Length: 439
Figure 1: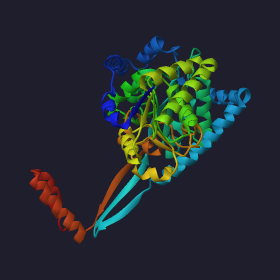
Figure 2 (figure 1 turned 60 degrees about the vertical axis):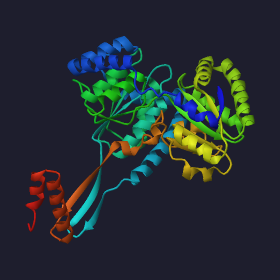
Figure 3 (figure 1 turned 135 degrees about the vertical axis):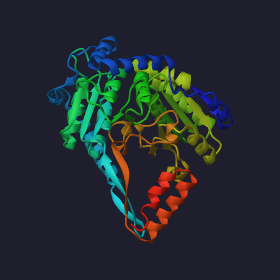
Figure 4 (figure 1 turned 90 degrees about the vertical axis):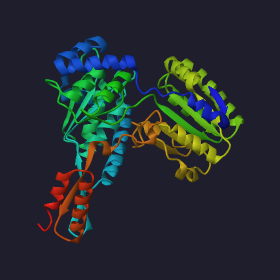
């Protein structure tokens, strides 16, 4: 864990190279994409036999399997099911509220010139959910429910097969619950993982329909496939290692807990804090070490990940004043920004770059990750400078319309278009405008 003053921050930040691609991963993924483009399902099963726990002959999963998984969850872990239901309802409500912000309208720009907007759901959306040691069944809810609430006509869930040829049971159960909660009847599920799944969804195969957009988290091979195939398919964004920035003025135990919560994700995760004094910085460091020792006894795997993450990228910056802290926070542009400070409301207007903002000591990032209703699929690696997190808007197209009738406003626009087109050397564009005069 490194502690520095804000005076040294700019020099430190220049050393933090953000790796937006991995050449070896890209080369492997390009080979996979080419094979899926050529051989479809055969290639998907071939790479599943290499990288997944099984290679099912039938890629599509009967939805009854998801319903069985949901029923089994009810019997074996009712507390988890209750938590998932709470999360489902809140994500649904928040997504519906987001949808209300996107609406059709027409606006008379001038006499004879009526402009408009239509909001149209994507026809077919795909959601990718990783498998692995920690299947992210919470991401099933975060990704599927906004798509359902947007009104997507057909939604596909893809997740790697386990040894029985099916995705993780909790992933399947969460998918069934999301569909049930939203009343969705257009969900299809495929047992596919990795770059081969992204390629199949982007290109289409004999049994996998071609998606219009792919959303959801994944490893570097999944991220590489999404980046390479963007253009042939829409994507939400490229997500890298997760990160948090905590602005804290004395609740050191809470800051330590939240930094560890971020660091346990992955050795490349980044947990950072901004504090006003060296005393607070040292106290957070002590609290982290105390909690780490306890974690090593209860969950050594998480403890190991967290320790490596904090040793290699953990950072506490001691800032001079509020303006100094805001400047650094906007440069870091964190995925998660937590305000554990007095008078946090006064800081909000100047904070511009973050994936999600957690205001006040009680607003734990963990609530955003699971149960508050906001989405946890967020921009990483400073991409919060130009985009927000996954939402209903990713599954909607905002298109424009134009209606014209003869009138002073129309004639002014028509004449301006004719003049501008001719000035650009596009004579046929000018003719197109000119031939509508007095029609």
